[in-house]
Image 1 (cartoon, rainbow, N blue to C red):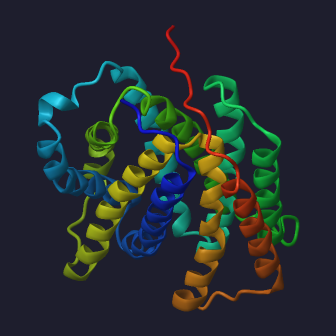
Image 2 (tube, helix red, strand yellow; image 1 turned 90 degrees about the vertical axis):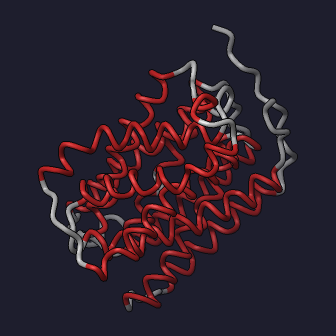
Amino acid sequence: MAPAPSITKAALWMALSIASFLAMSVAGRTATAALNVFQVLELRSVIGFFILLPLVMTGGGFKAMRTGRPLAHVARNVVHYAGQAAWLYALTLIPLAVLISIEFTTPIWTAILAVSFLGERLSRPRLTAIVLGLIGVVIIVRPGVGSVDPGHLVVLGAAMCFGVSVVMVKSLTRTDSVVRIIFWMLIIQSAVGLVPALYVWRNPAVELWPSIFVVAFTGMSSHFCMARALSHADATVISPMDFLRVPLSALIGWLLYSEQIDAFTASGALLILTGNLLNLQRKAPQPAEVATS
């Protein structure tokens, strides 16, 4: 039985997802400074699998992980793996706040795809929240001021992949449990990334292992929490909440990497928060109908 729609529960799960993503950003930057992106992704998937095992065992074991939609899982995880690889690579190219800001073209693709393929409504409050959030992102990034960094294009490609992935996760939550979705994410992405990881493999230094474990844990928890949030609300409701990562990443960049927070960043963050408040004040959505075709 699908969980009952609840904006409050969706917001709480999304807050945990955001915290996980931010922790993964910091740990990922540390790990990718010394290791190849493909190796970091492989270690994340393998370690994450063992972290997930207790939930698998308490949820009915491997038998309960069987899915009637294997191709949907494969498609979602191939796209998501590509996005993750691009995202981690971009961590080595551009500042954290800039990376997260550009990543937030993701809700545009998510909203369009959710309306087109999931039958969700792009209501005026949702559209307003998305528009305000994106305006805030543009103010923070200020495109056109200075040259375009190749890292910006890498993140844009990652954002497109993430938009497709979010919609696929929303579809999968209609038939598969959250644990099952994460289980197949770790299995499929481990298989997809094995060969490239072995090709660039180097033994991690001892001091890198804490960052690797953080990447592995948050790589699982971020998607676990995201999937739980999506099970309580539409993708077009969840995505604008995720805009909060922009001002928070700017704060982390300032605290850890001495990245400056200027008036543009503050103004953009205010618009993003306003959009999120408008979105959260909406009435809880009705359960979406499951397609029978």
